Amino acid sequence: MTDHHIGLIVPSSNLTMETELPRMMRAREAVAPDDRFVFHSSRMRMKHVTPDELRGMNAQTRRAAAELADARPDAVATACLVAIMAQGPGRHRTAEAEITEVLRDEGAAAPVVSSAGALITGIEALGARRVAVLTPYLRPLTELVVAYLEDTGIEVVDSVSLEVPDNIAVARLDPKDLHDHVGRLDLSGADALVLSACVQMPSLPVLQAIEDEVRLPVLSAATATAYCLLTELGRDPRVPGAGALLSGR
Image: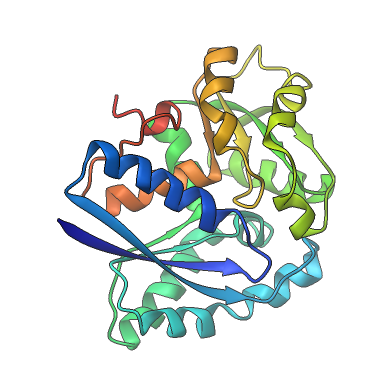
């Protein structure tokens, strides 16, 4: 059995990424028992998903990465999609490079994944070019996410914002309500559905059921991050019950 140590850089108010990502990896362990995944987190202060708090959180990145380096992770994921996308097109590459530099300087070289970059990678891996997007954000932040995706050549055919600025309240949203929220989206021109463009909004419990219902590939920022972490670790990106991206097809 091989232990894979995964470092997570998360907002201080995060409740969901540290739940959904381990849950996916435990499901993978059931079908690939030779791999075991161990998680270590470093936190950056943020309670409300507003431009000011996001900027303040981003300023803590180097400190969080340096602390995480002490655990000598095999791979690292920075997990606040909107904090990166709100900074403008292409920012995920800069953020990943900054964390990579800190890890290297601390003697802990490891591949780095951002949830922002992972979502783009996941959409492209599905062969999708037109997506519908569901976010918990205030509408202006959703518009920044849409612009970020479209800068990469991914067309957003429709989006819904749930307008929840309190990050703890986002984590407490009932994933069962996503069925109704998806019903507000026009999926007629979409190749795929981004069920949660936020690692804090829970979606994993209903993701596979919604994919079966809408008959489109469905992914989330969390499933895309899992896909990229597994790929960077050289493992088969396969997790049962987590949608087409992690189906192994």
